[in-house]
Structure formats: structure tokens, C-alpha cells
Length: 638
Image (cartoon, rainbow, N blue to C red; front, side, top):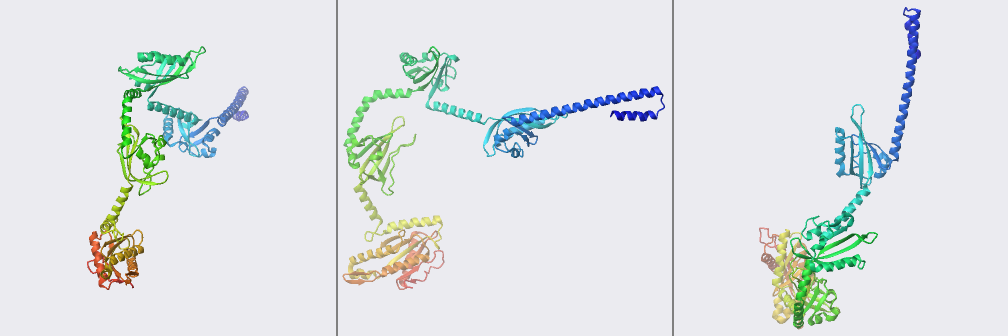
């Protein structure tokens, strides 16, 4: 640079007409300028080198601090992209550095906390804030959330002041958050448990100047929170005068180390003036070097209702004893079996009739669970008939059952009729059960006989006309609900009339006819399935409901019945008799009409079969057809 200045000056001077002295002066000035420029250049280069060295050292310090930091450090662009991060942050989230730096902070933030980051970013861009710190949840690579505390600032352009990027320090506080949650949950459970149990807590601490009481404690006595705090002896003034000495003795015994904890029952005056009973329990948990009490904690429980109950029980004990004796004599004398239990289902009483029916002596049964002595099942299902306590606050009517069976220890059975009544006291509390039962074996057998006789034909044992009509009405109603067409599926009605049966009655008498009708019933029943219904409508007329199947399947079944009846090997007084049957079929469907209409159609089809030569099956026409003509009879042999 200096040489260039000298050369330039020489060239310029050569073109100027100057004197010797002037020329020397100019050359001296030029040399001075060149030397100065050289000195400045040296200084500039040295400053540039120093700045570069400082920048490199600063960058190295930042790099080492970032790489070796125990907490996460992240550089985030204004668009949310992660520009750079350190090992602590990627380790916290379970990613690699490349994976994290390919994401935005929105992608790794818990959805519920994304808005916090957006609001902070907007405020930084708007220039309203330059730094930030808050807590939020990130999402690990496996999707689990983790709590973190963020503290950082925005880096701005030195000239324009525009934000360039953010630098955040991110501390893992997940363990602390979980600990806080556990503590809060435990405290909540503790407070709920105390409030639910109706217990208040007191805390005597000399270092804090007295006694503090929980909200439940003061509310039980009608005071407001904090109204009784302070003076450790103030609560003694609220105790009933007759109980103060008892409380003082219990207190001295505990402080002297004679009892593991302080416990006393006493009366305290409510703020409105009435007396309440309390159970106070506490324990000294800290003493000073001289053994003087420093801190004690205890609880106060309202036992007023219990005390009132005890008082009532004391007054009525003699009356209850007399009443119990009268009830015992009464129960011993009645003809029904009686078993009483307590609330836990343990037997408390059995009268002699119950001992006889169960086969267990009363002395052996007392205190045992009910199921060890009394086990009743439903006669039809075989399931145990439960004798459970009523729901809390619900009605408690007596439970009657007339189809119970008592199973004894030796596996013998006895039909009984039982009535189970819960015992509820005047406080609507369940106290036990009273089970009254009778031997109902003979009556149950008679009921079954009467029920069977009412629904079955006395001669053949098949369903009688009335029970058959009821069953058919139910099937017709169901077909209407289901919309069964009757063409491809559903139920089929079959009307059967015996051929040549009158000849048997005329030649062999009614005894022969009855015997033959029994054989016919067995034959029809033997051809059909167990779900099909077979009935004798009267005389030599029978009816069948095929529970499932098409008209074609019903025709096949009808032919089988005709073959079975025709093939009966029946003889009376040495004389063989051969009979046949004619059958009319009608479908049971949604639009088949009433039961008597179905029977009438099948009856008409049966007569058509008889007119066609007997021993035939004839299917009634579809009820929707305009023609009343029955279909062509089908010969049984065809």
C-alpha cells in the first residue's frame, strides 16, 4: 500500500513543474503518508485477527456449554423449526439429534400445551416480550408426555431489532410434577376420608403458638374456620363440667407415658348452646430435651348419635328382653317353620318345625351361615333362590315363592312355600331376615296333577283342545309380529280325522276304541319331533302344529302319519282292525286370519281328502287366493 502511494506521487511530480525544494517536500509528505497507511493496515489486521479469535473462543464456549449442559438447550426458528439442540434435550425425548432437528416444536409438544408456545412466539415476534419462562409438556418419541420448564429469550438483529431466533433452556421436571400430583392426590384422599368419616383434626404445636383445628372440627361445633385457633386451652372451656376431670386424667396418663395415646369420650358445648358427644384421640409426637410437650396431633369424632342410641338401648333393655321372650315362645308354638338371621346372614333362631324340615338341630345351626342349613332352589330351573338384603334406602317387601324346593344335607328334597321378610330397624338399617316356610310337597303334587289334567286329554295324554287353542293363538300372534309369510317357513297346522274308526267302536265297543285312540296318539307322537305340538280335539279328531318347516315338509310329515296309522297292528278280542287317516293342512302365517279360520280351512281340506278316497293329504289353498277350491288331494301311496 505504501509503495503504491510513493509510485503514484513520483508519477504526478514528474508531470508538474516544481522546484527542487518543493519536490523534496512532496516526496517527504508522500513517504509519511505511506508509512502511516502501513501502520494503520498493520493495526487493522491485528484487530481483525483478535476479533476472529474472540469470536472463535466465544463460539467454542457456547458450543461446549451447549453440548455439556445437563439441561436441554434448543435454538428455534421463528417458524417453529428446531434449528439446533444439544444431547440433553434429545436424550430427554428419546430421539436422535437428526430426528429432533427435522421437527418443529409444535410436533413434539403435548396437544393441550401447544397454545402456550404459539402465544409466546406471537408475543416475541410482536416485540412485547424479549424473554420467557413457563412449564409445559413435551411428547417423547414413544408418545408418553413429559413435563419441562422452559426459560429463554429472543435473539434480535443488532441494526433492525427484528427477531431472528429463540434460544431456550429446557429442564426436565417430570419427576417433580409426578411427586406433586401424588402428594395432592394423597392429601385429597386424606381430606375426603376425614370428611366422609365425620372426623376433625387438631394440631397442637408450641412453636407455632397454639392449636389449629381442621374445617371439619370447627364446623362440628358450629364455628367458622380459624375461630377457635390459637389458645391451646380454649377447647377445655367447651367441655361439659362433669366430663372435665375424666379428660384431664386421660391427658395426664398419656403425657406421663402410661398410655400409648390419649383417648376420651366427653360432651362439648355447640356454639348454639346444646351439648354434643365426641370421641377425642391424640398422640404426642414431639417433646423437648426436658420431656415437655412440643407437638401433638389428634382427631375428634362426633359420636352423639351413638351415645343417644346407647341411652335408648339402656332404657329399653328390660322391655326388649321381655318382648324377645314372648316372641320366642310364640315362634316355638306356631306350625310354620321359622329361621331368623342377622345382617351378616348368620342364623340367630330356628323353631322346632324348621329343625324338622331342614334336618338340622337348632343348637348346631346357631351362628352358622344360612346356606349351611337352608338351601332352596327353583323347582323348574334348579337355580338357587337367593335370600339377599334389600338395597340401601329401597323398599323391603316380603319375597314370596310357591315353587321352592328345600334340599337337605342328605340330598333329600322337600317342596316348600317360603316367605322371606327383611328386618329393618327404626333408622332404616337392615338387621337380618325372617324366613317362614311350610312343607308343600303334597299340595305341590296335587297342583301339578290338576294343572296337567287341565291342559291334557285324559285318555291319550296329548294336549287337549283348550290348551292347544291357546298355544295356536300364541303362534298366530307371533307370526303377525314377525311378518311370517308361511310359504317357505313358519308353522303348519294339520287336521287329522281317522278313517273307519266308527267300525271299531261299533264292533269292539268303547273300550276297543279307547285302546285304539291311545295307539294312534303314540303313533302320531312317534313320527313328529319333540317341539311339534300334538293334541286330541275330541272323538277321533287330532291336530298337529309343526313348529317349523315348509308346506312341502308338512306334506311329507302328514304322509308319514298316515302310514304310521295305517300300519298299526291292532286287534281286539282276537279280531284285527285296520284304520286309516285323512289329513288337511293349512299354513300359520301373518295374514292367515284367526285361529278358528285356520282350523276351518284345514277341516275343509281334510274333508276334501276324505272325498278323494280317504288316506290322503290335502293342502288348503292360500288364504289370499280368490278361489275357495282346495288343492288336489295327494294320495298317501303316491
